[in-house]
Image 1: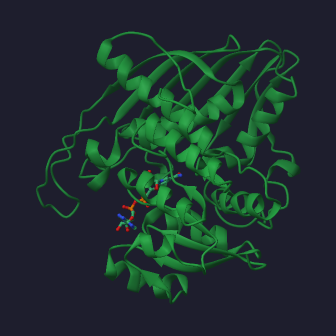
Image 2: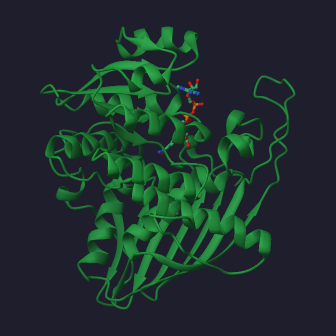
Length: 371
Ligand SMILES: NC(=O)c1ccc[n+]([C@@H]2O[C@H](COP(=O)([O-])OP(=O)(O)OC[C@H]3O[C@@H](n4cnc5c(N)ncnc54)[C@H](O)[C@@H]3O)[C@@H](O)[C@H]2O)c1
């Protein structure tokens, strides 16, 4: 490998432009060397947007490219497994978007392939990198909140009720709000409080989404636009999650509303996406108060990102690439890895099973076997 980590992006759509390319740009150890997308018009546009010349429409070509050390997969969900397995077989380190696969079995297979090839693997669970989330984690793990008892997550978006494209079909996306939004919250809950033991979940669909944004009719949506679960963690804490893309009044320039909170025996702490450089804390019996996130939690260690620059709810997302590249350079596991992606997916799958069967489901997630 050269001194620089040479990165290829597979999937040149929205999230690559919003999170990953800016993340590569601010990391002096990383270089964007190649981009893959079947959409040739978009590739042409990305040449000028992103200042690259090497492009391909075939991910197998990227997987075999000796000039690429690592890839970021940001394609529709149903393609993640096949692309990741090809890139791992080609010796590439892989960061892959969430949901890692269409179900636990696919995600666990991806984890095993990365582990067995001794390659770095990372699931793009963005919100773990929010400064206030990192500080809430510190408060939980240092024992400042005492014994954790309750976890609460609310993620409300007010999106147009037109087509979501590939995101609204089960064979392409797996599920709707549950796999798009709530899976992040399942992941950070397990990061904060440890594994879930048992859950009871529900999903609902209201919007037919049978018209595109430009007024063309299309096949109606098959996926949920509301998802929820209650869960019991192995450590004895309990949690409640609710997510929706149809919460009228919560548009907020696209950022919506997000609140996540831990209540322990000695205190409480809450993260809000729309104010990620501040945190709400109650310690020693005092009421919740807003305090700035301490400086050392504003970026991940070593990140060259200036926390004063840019829109706070956006810019922490650039730290994902820094973590991925650090893991490659330091030859250590990236966090969150494919194992975390698979463990969150086991819970999201259980939400669907629980709702179908109208029952509580125990979480059994054996990364070496089937769920
Ligand atoms: N981590 C986050 O916060 C976050 C945010 C948004 C999206 N995502 C995830 O990122 C992924 C992409 O989402 P998006 O919003 O960028 O979607 P998008 O539709 O804007 O972009 C996807 C791109 O992948 C391309 N593509 C399709 N098949 C391909 C293939 N076989 N090889 C290469 N490229 C291919 C498409 O042409 C398109 O340009 C999804 O898995 C989504 O869940 C994650």
